Image 1 (cartoon, rainbow, N blue to C red):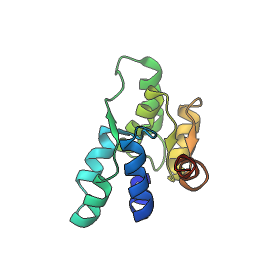
Image 2: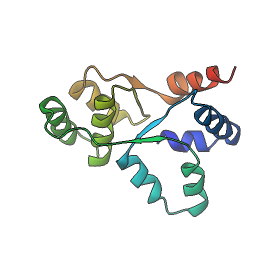
Image 3: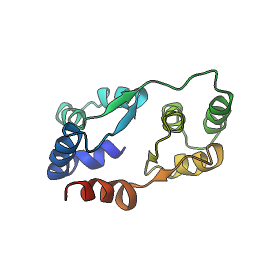
Image 4: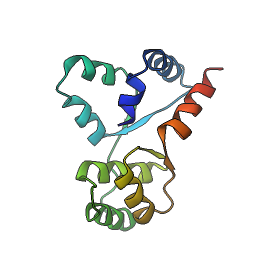
Length: 134
């Protein structure tokens, strides 16, 4: 989870907090991601994850046939959990990149949601965050 990568760097976590407070950066999270964070058993780690300020976005409209079809394809894909499939579909509905290191999810999303932009932490999201601080 990208939240783990942000929380692993205290200086970056503080910078993300500053940038989101100033509205220079907006990180969006699906309700499934927030539930996963809330279920983190280690209290200290959970608190660090909760410090990553995000805009929690609603699930996509279930009547959207294109997204429903994509969700079905994702759910039928090897190694993709229901939560991860819903996160990918939510990113597509929001029109924002999906930042993930999960190879199975990336591969499945590339097929099910070909117009979804896929980002990696080290090469895409982290450099963009760092560029905002300058």
